[in-house]
Each structure stands twice: as structure tokens, then as C-alpha cells.
Image 1 (tube, rainbow over the protein chains, first blue to last red):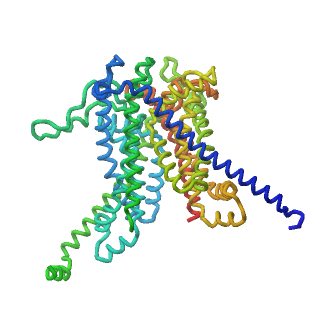
Image 2: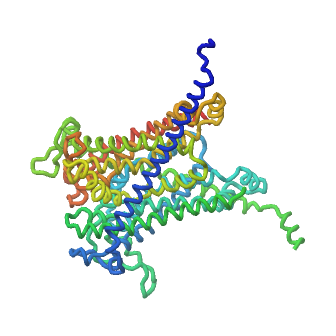
Image 3: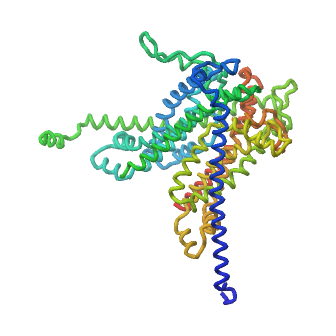
Length: 310
Length: 311
């Protein structure tokens, strides 16, 4: 390089200070965008609270929907949500954990494993409404299961299956290999290692994944609309517990239902403003539920990360 | 105590025990395999069902008419089955969403991976997860009853239902996803590259833009494509805030319907099982599935390539 091309000290100083300025500006822009996102979330929450909070009352939580906006409530909606979530958790969690265990501990390196891997990734990206079409065509009509709690629970379970699988795998992957080798050295076989060591040690990660998955399922609307959930339900499904033997009743699984997001969608689609306020109040309830679940997951993850020292 | 321990330690496992253990192992392995294979079965079920119902649909309507027709009115007496108006609505809204999410997500990812101090990142990341976790129906409410009125004060000729507000809101919704996939890619870039650049006197911005971004490019591109796939498949925000009339236009100020919104609209009414109206939602669904499948496979491939380069 010729001497003429070398910047002298003053030029160098300008270049450095200009670069530092750009760097500072970029950091500012990055922080600004994050702040804008914070503000938008705040705006969303405050807007919902201003519209909806005045409508929130015990009567609102424990009334059925009604033609009259001031008498309408969300009892059947949140009861439906709770029942659907029970079915979703019972299906998605065992299935997801089992699939995660297989892929992480058993799967040989071959084309079949490759297909399953690509599949799980792809399923996570399939739009939720497509799952709704699957449930409509297969569960509702082909298997004749009706537009019921069990179908909604099943379709949401399929929807969050990739979330449970991925978090199970991540939890398993964080267990050091030495744990497995120690168990094998003592004479355990593979299933003993998996069931007595891998599974118990990864349960915190799996629990977090389960909560994240359920918090996603609880707010899902599209697939439940597609299977044809009714928007006006002025009764509760039969109680799962009854007075006479056998004390447990499964009729609720085959009951028509509605869920919170559908109730919100129904109210927000109406022209009358009074119903919009109901939608805001129900939205506030739903948002609080999801935020609490998310916060629980974040807290659990943080706690477990601090706790575990291999 | 020590006697009992000693005697136990010497006991050889019986043949019966070993056989039972082997059987349990095989049964467990089989069950776990079936669970993993269930995901493949789900995909097959989706493809089978969409294709079967669509085939009946295409017995009535030619594929050419479906792909090139400019009117979508399957529920009218004079039924027209051209999917272009739904595709245009879908693409306009996804396009607006990407205009928000791509620059926003990339800058947030660069900021988180190269600039933010560790503790700030620990605060921002869970916050972004919360933003991602807000139910879409709540975002729909926000788009219709907050964003649209606010925009109308700046743009007087904005319709009450329009594509702009849901597009912007979907953009905010997928921004955390784009940011987190991009950031994963940036963090996979080896430290040596950064340190080499710093040693040459580069600033953090120069490292971020000229070293990290090109090095992580395929991962960042994957984030854009997967974000696009999400925007295309987003349903509730659009169904609530964009109106439900199919409208072949590129003007974001007008109302329009997307593929997903149409499926919702039909599902709300009660069309008889097996009618042609019923089959249209499967034909529309198949179109949507194929679009997102292509995006997902390309995105998956790009991410995998990044991983192969650096691991």
C-alpha cells in the first residue's frame, strides 16, 4: 500500500468517531424497535382493559351468553375451554413425550428417521386452520365423532404436538452423556436408562414445553371454528362427576361446546358496540390466562436452569 | 444391613428377569416408535383428506378456471370459482406483514445477538415470547377496534375493514418469530469470525452488518421465509379486521378476504356435508397447504444448510 493511501492521524480520528456514531445510532434503533414492541403490547392491553374492565364482574363470569349484551356472560365459554384443554393435555403430552424420547434416544440414523424429523418440523409450520379442515373431514364426518369437546381437544392436541416434541427433545439433549454411561455400566438396559434416568431428569423441561403448548392451544380459534363449534351455548356439558356409582361420567366428551376465543370472535363480529365491550372483557380473561401460563413457563425455565448443576 | 447388601450384590439376574426386561424394552421401543410415526400419519391424513375432497371439487370446476378466474363467489346463485381474489388478499396482507417483520425482526436479532448486554437480553427474550403468545383473536380485536380507527385519522379514505391494519398487526405478531429464528442463526456463527473482525479494528456495527449478517445469511433468509409462511396461514386477525368479501385488488386500503378468512366464513354457516360449497374449503385449504409447504421446506433446507456449515 502506498503511503498516500494511508490516512493521517486526524483523518483516522474522524473515521473512528464517525463509525462510533453509526454504531451508537444502530444500537439506538435496535432498542427503539424493542420499545415500540413494548408500547404496542401495552396499547393492546390498555385498550382491552379500558373497554372490557367495566364489564368484568362475577355475573359476567357466571352467566350464559344472551341476546342482551348487558346480561351475557362467559360461563359456558370458559368451562368449554377448560374441558377442551383437559383432553388436549391428555392426548398431546404422552404422545409428544413418547415421540421425543424415540427421536432422541432410539432413532437410528436412516431415511425413516429423516422423514420423521422433517415431518415434525413441517407440521409445526402447517397453518392451524388446515388442522381444522383435517378434523372436520376426518373426525367429524369420517369417524362420526360430531362437533364435540373430544374433537376440539384432539385437534388442538395435534396442533401443539410439535411444541411438546421439540421441548422434550431439548430437555433430553441437555442431559450429559455420562449419566447414560453410568447407568449402562451398572447393567441397566436401554429402557431402564430411559425410564429411570432420562425421563425423570428431563421432566422440568417437558413441563415447561407442555405449558407453552397449552398456552398456545387455549388461544387458538381457527381450527375450532372450522370443526363447527357452536357460538351460542346456553347450557353446560354434563358434569364429569356424579352422585351415584360409578361416580365418573364421560358424557361431557361428546357434548357440544363453545370456547373463549370463539365467544370473543362471535361478539367482535357483531355490529353493536355493546357486544364489542363484552368481547374486550372476555379477551381480557383469555389474555390473562395465556400471560399467566407464559409467565409460569418463563419462571419455571429460569428456576430449573439455576437449579440444575450436572 | 451389610450382610443383606453383600448377598444381594452377588445375586445374578435370573434368566426370567432378563427375558422380561428384554420384552419390556422391545414393547417400549415399539410404542415410542409408533408415537413418533404418528406425526407422519398426521401429515398423510392431511394430504389424503385435502386431495380427496379437492378431487371431487375439481370434477365440477376445471383447474384452469380455479387458478385463473377472477371472481370467487361459490355461495352465490351464479357461482364463480376463481381463487385469484383470495390469493391477492392473502399476498397483500402477508406482504405488509413482511414489510414490518423483516426489517424489524432482523434489526432486533442483530441487536440481541451483537449489541445487547447479557442481562437486557434475558429481559427482552421472554418479553418477545409473550408478544408471540397473545391469542390471535385478541390481535384481531386490536386490529379492528384500535389500529384501524387510529390509522383512519391519518388516512381518511381507509375503509372500516381493510388490509392495512391486519397486515401491520400480523407483522407485529410474526416479528418475534423472525427475530428469534434469525438470532439463532447469528449465534451459530463461530466466535473466531467476530474476533478476527474486531482484531482488524471493525466496530460492532461493521461486524454485525459485514460479517455476521452474510455469515448467517441462509439462516436469516430461512427466518424470512418461515415468517412469510406464518403470515400466509394467519387466520383470525384477517377474518376479523379485513372484511370477508373476496376482492381482486392490490390496494391495502380496501377490504378483502384471504384463503384462511374464506374457510372461516364458510365454517360459520352450516353448509351440508358433501355439497360443493363444503368442498370449496378443502380446495382452498389445499392451495394454502401447498403454498405454506413450499415455504416451509425451503426454510427448513436453508436452516439445515447453515447448521452444516458451522457445526
